[in-house]
Image (tube, rainbow, N blue to C red; front, side, top):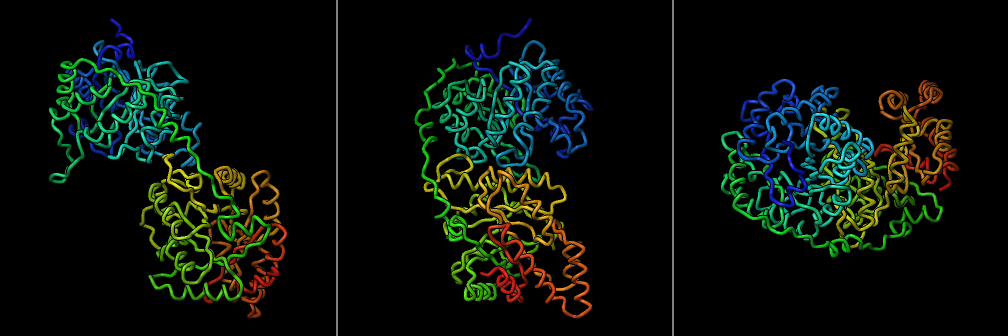
Length: 614
């Protein structure tokens, strides 16, 4: 006998979803470094045992063991080509265990990578990956979909659209939140609930991350803005470490007491996530049977939506910084790079900045952890230069070492201290620096970070919530005219401009012919360009730049000039002459320059500036 319509059932009664799959498999001896999804193929009986235990406990909905069975996550285990087999088999195992007594929900989790606007994976690419998984689950025979543990409303929206392109089955869309009720990316429920409804979710809810108490408070907020049914699948509390193991300590009775409160708040689908077992589901089922469904609250979220629509006036570019004003007026800003010191002593750095100011240079470029080495933070160095030397800075800010929320906090702090010009870069991987065993974060790349800062400039954080007055960052990005794959470099540059970049800084330029061709290809994405110039100090320096610095191309003719000069004992003079020639030729092609020289050779940078007539 076929099961009644799922959404129709939710109109008449509360349904109970199952609990954790990972917790149960771990308890049966499956190590965490295994692909739990692959067990659908290698140990199907074990997966079936877990499903059957939840079915016997009274679960009305059984989720497939496919939470991480997308191409991206499976690739980490060498299983990318088995997406269809793992998902289809997962659905069949769950169907066999549920029989005609429970609905089978195709479980889909996040990709585990950032998608645009914060990451480099396009929304259309994400939809394709989700679509592949959804199609296999439909062929396996699922009755509905549960999209769960998403931190990014944009990503879960892509998943909803992917499922909708495959079938018309019901969709339960569940975000995961912090204790404060906002998503892990800081989006408030008053924002993501309407977004998920608009995307096409039939049920909107929460799962994972927090225990029932914190989740209840968020569910109550969601109930005031939701027009669809709600779901709740909390963890069994926060895990605690006991004798080297992380254990969830909420009792089945405690979880059941909160199930009653969820239902009173309008929840129609209730279950459990990490740490929950068939015993928890059994007690939740008993609690559900004892309660008549509460009326679903469907208060329109007018107030919340009005808050989201509030916009503040952004700061005009010319008012953001002296550099921005110079570019806006058609001037030609010149920056000199000063590398943060090793250690904490900043006297020499500040003195170099003072000397540059005396010579008429009022813009200093501060790289962030150049070549992934251990130095004073670029942010601290920039603040010291601005406050003690009175010189405006361009702060390099790299994605390598920080997660998305940490970067947002850093930048807000930098703005409060007067930093305005920022050069947003992805950053060198640690393996090319002094500490190859150090780890990197790369939560987002430079395109995603540009979107973040542009959002701050509109007065909103990454979650779309107001921050008060908008920031006034003058946003710069990096571009490499000598990129090995120039088409890809220009494609990424176009994304950066669309994200909000206002100026660009190049890698060191040595080949004018190559650079002219690059400028001609910028097309509609042309923004002010500051070309980097590096005076060569010696033949060894020239050979090093040509062979060991990623993204830099030094023509053979330049190497030959340096070799001849080196033989005559005048390599440094020739290096300066080459830099002056390049600077003069660049004057008509770019809107500014950035000159790099060693801390002991500031006079060399000044020699290049003389060639610019500045």
